[in-house]
Image (cartoon, rainbow, N blue to C red):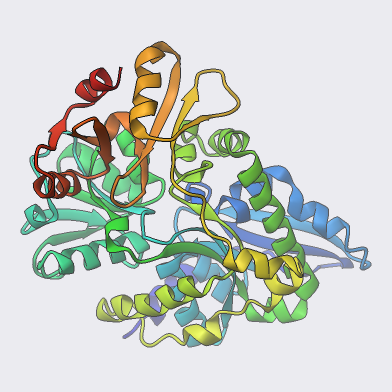
Length: 445
């Protein structure tokens, strides 16, 4: 493997400002540089939302250690440039997805600039953060239909990992069975709309955004893999050792932002939407009270185990060699930052899935025990609904009610993210049938 020319090229674009260290001419002034991805919205507790709340700056101001701190927030589209800047010593703390985190670990070790995974942002224990979508008028109805087709993804991302694993389970060679287009999410979304790719495999929030905009429909729910996926926070090892109290301040602030998101999910969604330009309804799909993503800074054992399984996918793609996950994961700082609360967070389970309606002009959503009850409410208030969400009957993945595939099974109305999952249910339950959203609303009313 020869990555040095690529890394060297990326480093040419590294900013020349000092970070995590005293500014020139003032030994008491310290700039802390944080790399984040504003539109990768399950990192918001370490990025977009945290920045808007100002919690990190408040924590730094409370240190009273003789230093004056400034936070330099740098926004990127993906994790790769954050890794490049970290290995150049230009970013102190960064957030990215599980597969990019492994590349972050590998590059850091390769270049003698080791990094450490110090906390988790958003996660889904089944893998629902990644989705494969097609154009709204596509005739593709199952993973098997992707054989020989063009599929856009970002190689080295968690969404690419989902694509590889899903194809393997469908009996399709992920290297030879499809024509893979390595594209940034926005480019892939445009390619899907232009008809130059048949499908798109991407991470939060692209699948939900495209579905909400009517530009795509789900083909495969990543939660069908039943493998955890997550985003996390990585820090340069030298920064963590030199300024542990600063890193702990960041992690305390992240925990505060997490608690704010969990306590005020609608307000948090509105805040993130304002900062990113994403529709609040899409943000809430992922980050809401029963959203696809759960948030907690604790580094849960099942997430570490999943990270170890991810290594083989990256090795097969020749993106990394072996990665020592155990040495990369370092929870000492978040344990200290959260104190006795850490053990409680470590074992906390995600919120149970539920059907939710977001009424227009409302600051709170309304939950329902069943999808049918939600549909009855929507049917009676169709002009007053901002968004309606239902959990997939098989995987629990939340989806927009009007974009779901509905199945009528007697009096039961069951939503599914993907058509193949719905057909699987129908084939196993005599009398069940796929119905349109309008038919489901009529039955529920």
